[in-house]
Image (cartoon, rainbow, N blue to C red; front, side):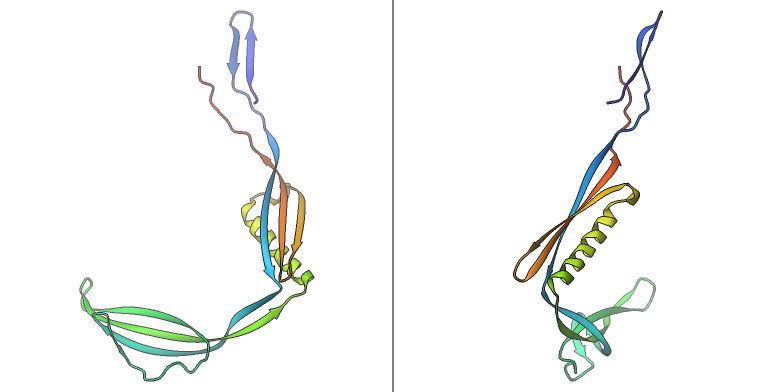
Amino acid sequence: MIGGWLEGKYTGMRYVHANGSVEAKVWYSQKETVPLKEIKTERTGKEETRYCVKINNFPINLYKTLSNFKKYDTIKENKKIKLFSDFYLPLTVEKITNYEIKEEEVTYTKEQAKEIAVDKAKQALDEKITNKENIVNIYTNYQETDNAVEVEVIYEVLEEIGTKEKIVF
């Protein structure tokens, strides 16, 4: 606590406003786990678009076949039909877009998994910390299992923790 007071010959002791700063080392930690084998999905760039009309939520498909893709993501967009600015018909046109995806199994070495986990953890911590110049130390802890690597990154940051308060008598 930082406080201030004055003692006068005629006024005695009285409290006055004091300025100061209080700094402390604060630790922020983030844990990330990266499996040694994982399946990544990517869009191939191929897509197909289909339309459907809904009357009172009863769908009427304007297409006959299923998707040509083995694996795909589906995005649906609905658009209501309106006559006037506030009057909508019970008719909806639905646009269905299928994006082809491919799945790929990726295998990492333990060193690659450590690097990826450290990068993810540091990225998450960098979003939390506003003043990166005050980082004093960075600690990293690793724990390896048969099918994953767990990393904990700890930032030691020097921060201002003092607060200003009014003196109430």
